[in-house]
Amino acid sequence: MSGVYWMEAKMELRKMARLRQYSLSVVGFPLMFYVFFGLAMASQMTPGPISISKYLLATYGAFSVMGATLYAFGAGVAVERGLGWLEVKRASPMPAGAYLLAKMVVSVVFGALVVSLLFALGAIFGGVRMPAGQWLLLWVVLVSGAIPFGAIGLAIGSFAGPNSAPGTVNMIYLPLAFLGGLWMPIEVLPKMLRQIAPWLPSYHFGQIGLAILGAPTEGAIATHVEALVGFGLIFAGVAWMAQSREHVKMYG
Amino acid sequence: MSVAELRRVSKRYGEVEALRGIDLSLERGELLALLGPNGAGKTTAVRILLGLAAPTAGEAALFGHHPASQEAKMRRGALLQVAKVPETLKVREHVELFSSYYRNPLPIAETIAAAGLGGIENRLFGDLSGGQKQRVLFALAICGNPDLLFLDEPTVGLDVESRRTLWGHIRGFVKRGGSVLLTTHYLEEADALAHRVAVIDRGRIAAEGTPAEIKAQTGTSVLEDAFLAIMQENAEVMR
Image (cartoon, rainbow over all chains, first blue to last red; front, side, top):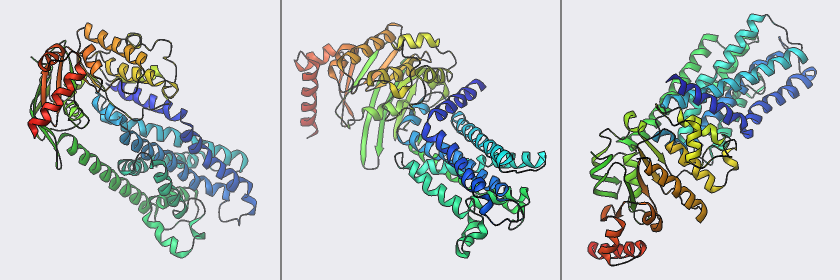
């Protein structure tokens, strides 16, 4: 039976890789931002304790994984649920777990790809240097972000309408990134906006990456990890409730 | 033993009674056409038999199993009305994926041939014509080598040639011993394919029999006239 899971993941990867609006934007935007702000404008920035090229590896890395995951789950599930394809799959003997696992594989593979490319840009053109263990730890932490954000994406996909889903994801994803301090350091934001940050999963995700790099962070790293796990569990619960509500409609 | 069965099944959506105590059974090797005007309850009956909707009262079974059980799913295939199929997978990839869900699927090449997809198996789904797309959905329904096929308005929106081609593939499936539950708006389609016809109106079975019997009952020579006569008669009874 494990063949089904592998096949579902393989086909989902091919499907999403060929879907330009997914693969190009998910890979292209973070890299473009990094080239502009992390490399081209690096010399214009006030040097903090670590270079801006290094700092942005953590926050744009977090931004990349969030994007790859929220679109794969949020937009993907909303469209397939809303336009009848999920029903065709449900009528077939496909194990339900294969569907979710395939979306997670896509998120992890695309997240890992963008993070790796960001790292390469930083090391080659941004002069970022750190011990191998630190590179590896940051990479693993960033890519693992697909797990809590997958749950958030699934919750979005359970409620968003099929035609408005990509817009809905943008309306959540972009403010999350900005207010969570992933586009520019959180210290730069006005005080009022800064107070919202602790309520956002993106903020905690960014802070964990920054802590690994030795950049100044707010609060203990354990708190941020706990917060992220908490968000993941809450939204997994929301998605599960939405799913069982639909299930009651189906099987009563 | 019947292949698919509804026993005194009712389905209520809020105020609306979609089905009012329907009995229906499909025998092995039979093609049963479910006819009826829009909103009569055809799709609801199919959804209940597929385990996608639960009856408010009554029972549904496929091969004696619950319609949503894995045992039932393994022995059936379904062509449903779907607004959007993933467009960036190739025909062959769609077939390979659905074949992997089943224990004893047909060889990929056999499915491709039985659905008339030879020569286009490496095209992306999004690049296909309407008739070709329906044939892919038909391929996904038969790839698991099922004993029972659900076809929910399989030829809607197709031109005459594509419709006739799909009819040929449906006949092929029945000839190999399969059973089919077909819902359609095209009475000509039911007349051409069905061994037996059940007309649903307002959630009840209004008439049932072979196409010839139905025509004889109403003294008409075309199924479409018989259908209209039944609808009219039923409307008078309801009044």
